[in-house]
Every structure is written in C-alpha cells, then in structure tokens.
Image (tube, rainbow, N blue to C red):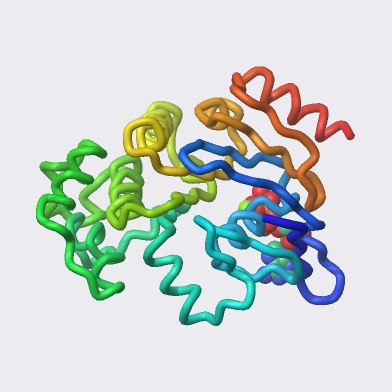
Length: 233
Ligand SMILES: Nc1ncnc2c1ncn2[C@@H]1O[C@H](COP(=O)(O)OP(=O)(O)OP(=O)(O)O)[C@@H](O)[C@H]1O
Ligand SMILES: [Mg+2]
C-alpha cells in the first residue's frame, strides 16, 4: 500500500496516508484501538473497499482503477477471507461451503483438493454435515478451509478468533500459522488479542488511521505493553 487514505463521507478519515508492504509468505497481525481503522485497512488491502487516494498492489497487480467486475474476479482468484462471524451458508454442507468460492468462479475443485483442505483443518469426517451441527471452532475451521481452497495469494482475517474461546482460538491460530509455514500462504489478520498477535511474524499498530508502530517476532507481553502505551498516548 502506498499513501493509502480512506475518507468516509466528508469528515471521517479512517486511514491517513498509510504506506506499508505486507511481505508474501509472512503472517502479519494488525492491532489498534477500536475505530483506529483496522477493518478499513484490511478492506482496502483486499480490494473489498476502494481507497479515497493512494495505491494498493496485490501480488503485483495494481488495484486502483479496477472496476467492480475486475475486483470481484481478483478477490475470487487471489484472496481468501475469514471473518469473526464465520459467514458459512447454513443450508449447504461443509463440503459445499468449502467449494463455493470455486463454483462462484465457474471452476471445479481439482480432484482431491476438498479432501486435502478439510483434512488440513481436521474436518475430513464432517464433509456432509451442516454448519449448525458444528461447534464455533469447527465452523471457523470450515471457513478457513473455504479461504484456502482457491490457493489464494493472501488470506485476510478480521478478528477470526474474536468469537472463539481460548483453546479453540489457539487451534485456529495454529492453522493460520501452518498455512504460512507449510503452504507458503500470506496471512493478514486483525485482532484485539495480544496472544493471537504473537502467532504472527510482525504486528502493525494502527492509531487514528496511521501505522504508528511495528513489532517483529512479537511475544504476547511485548504486544500488550505496546498496546497499553498506544492507549496512553
Ligand atoms: N462505512 C462507513 N461509513 C462511515 N464511517 C465509517 C464506515 N466504516 C468505518 N467508518 C469509520 O472509520 C473509522 C475506522 O473504522 P474501522 O471499522 O476501520 O475501525 P476498526 O479499527 O476496525 O474498529 P473495531 O476494532 O471497533 O472493529 C471509524 O471512525 C468508523 O466509525
Ligand atoms: Mg474492525
């Protein structure tokens, strides 16, 4: 992202000239107070929302100037999403939820791909179940399988562990970490939780629409200390 600003309406500057590179094959966490612009940052980085000014490149492709059709295609092909509220389709089975992004792109799942991603998230036995028959953690693992099935350049998560208990959250974080370490994926995750952020390679701190700090190889107590000092500032 280069000098990316996002202004809502006339007055709300959600991002102010943010310039940052999120390295491929790395896990980046984004933290900051409520309203600091984390979701806006994620949406602009992912091509879900257009910046007011500045430039976003994803996997070498310039997003600014793309029309909605091109952006939709880019998101389908290059981006996976995991949200706090899972966002599975209740009427579809686990397997159908996972293959949905491929089918929407008019593609068929390559042989073995669905079994492979479901195995990866530990849900090989649940392919025929519906989301309502699964726990929250299992539903989020389905959402992660769905995000991975297209082999995207980047997996974006907006508080993907926000609705999960500590143990279940840790399982999902380990899977995100494995997506980076074993599959070479790029992960960008917004979180409020220093323990979650400690799974990342780098933590970016946002305050009032700006990146004000970064921490490499973070541990949870260092992250918590930075957050506290941000709050104080
Ligand atoms: N669609 C919108 N229209 C108007 N203002 C918006 C819109 N979306 C976000 N904002 C404003 O932009 C600012 C940043 O919002 P954003 O959702 O990015 O914050 P956040 O860091 O994700 O917060 P939280 O931790 O509460 O999720 C806030 O002041 C918010 O009110
Ligand atoms: Mg948010």
